[in-house]
Image (cartoon, rainbow, N blue to C red):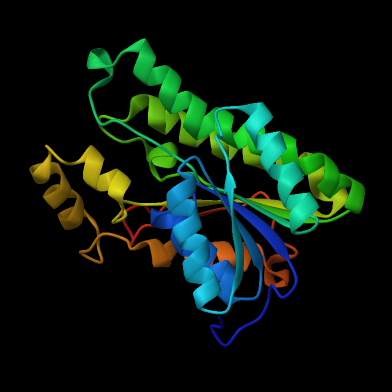
Amino acid sequence: MSSGISRLNGKVAIVTGAAQGIGRAIAMRLAAEGAKVAIGDIKEDVANRTAAEIKAARGEACAVKLDVTSLESAIAAAERVEREVGPIDILVNNAGWDKLEPFVESTPETWDRVIAINFRGVIHCCKAVVPKMQARGHGKIVSIASDAGRVGSMGEAVYSGCKGGIIAFSKTLARELARNNINVNVVCPGPTETALLQGVMEHQPKVLDAMKRGIPMRRLGKPEDLAGAVAFFVSSDADYATGQVVSISGGLTMVG
């Protein structure tokens, strides 16, 4: 499996929520650039299919059961990857979930799930991976946030708060880990064609049309649009970039 570029030869990466959508595209891209990729996902059967696709294209991949809402699961997944594949060089925090609704109509049960997956999941996976990265003196971490965390988004109050939290958390982690040669960066998608977006917008077709009209490039993002930015941040090309946030949104948000 090759894209003509092999910036990640021999590197071991774990990508959360990588069975489908943006995570799958990221995993495919990292494998194409030579990484050994662990497909971390709660949907183990779908993760196995994604790993099989990568292997069929002559890449290296394995599926790992991972529930990011559980610190114990995150630690177990990281230990398995270290044991069966090798020391983890790259962590991509991609797993996410949302429910579109006005805040006043939302419930504590929804808040808890959104926070557990989108924010605590990032904390759990970093806690599982960072200590060994520190001991080895190198590592790359990229977290997928959202432009909702930079400028807000109607109907996504708690989700936006989580994504903004990821940005602040990552900047702080970048400062703390710079002395260990560990880079921590954030990629913020705009509206992207995924099963998650389709589920969120299932009963909101007018909102989806309005989104497209508001994007200067006049289209939704594709998962592959995000994968290139992640591949850059986890490669040696970004060795001097840390604590950075980049939007991949077709120009929807242009934050200085």
